[in-house]
Image (cartoon, rainbow, N blue to C red):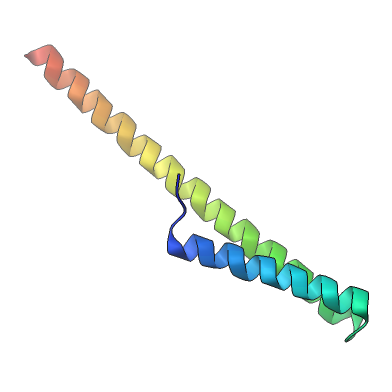
Amino acid sequence: MKPIRFETLLYTVGALLVIAGAVVRIGHLSSAATGFTLLIGGFLLGSVGQLLTFRRTRQLQARNRELEAKLANSQRKS
């Protein structure tokens, strides 16, 4: 299933935050708390994007099952 633009945006921003957090923590560019916050924020955004993808997939699968059931019922009546 191809992710929609919003989900892709969440993945991309999440990945950038994780990378930025790792650079901040490893390079000691700022406080350790800032790097940790960026890491956690990136993981959370990526997780939210993944959950949205799962939710949309379940909805589409349920819709497909309903349509298949309607098609099977209409073929039985014919």
